[in-house]
Length: 293
Image (cartoon, rainbow, N blue to C red):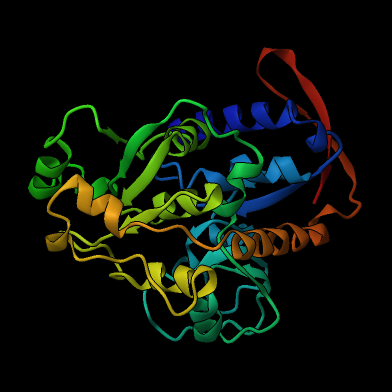
């Protein structure tokens, strides 16, 4: 029921996007088990590019977007992927997949695809959410598994008022805006790092216990596309003070981020083709015409 309510809200929001009027409705998959801003990027971004995603399980989806989702797909999946990645460092050949874009070259190698654009679509958020003028010093963006980590909690409380503790278990836009409103980002969440890169914010990432599923593979996959040969990773033991956080943090190259962003946007037009029109009625009697895909 909660998922259906989220679906209804997202379709209602899509109806208000001018580019979604008359747009194709595409069965799409993203992780929707609980609110999380990184997972919510797929249904939030696609209507801005003229595509209305309708949530479906992987076997029924024709488009899979943001996240480490390929392990959820059958190896004979023949739909499209856009910025999607693997969770773990495993070989998983997907000979029939339509790879519009993959998160990074490590995923591309493991699933044996070539010619796809690289990058996570989270890099596009700065094109749709303005960076706030008033900013805090540091945004801490812990993965949900790490919100109660004792060492991180102690570090964040060491200088009250200097750190903004970002809760990732929310929808995309407000979380992105909160991260963008800071001068430095410390994160154990991949999309904390990606959001920082979208706005050119110096960032540092670290790993805490409990370890994430797949370890740090998804971070290295992403950085192999954005900062090839370099990493913002710092061992948490070396982050003794908030000054250390700001000292170790650095920003991804803006021209590389812009290049990847253009590639991600250019990869979507195959889904903007003509299709039969359908009508969707939203809450409060709002009706919009879309094209069925």
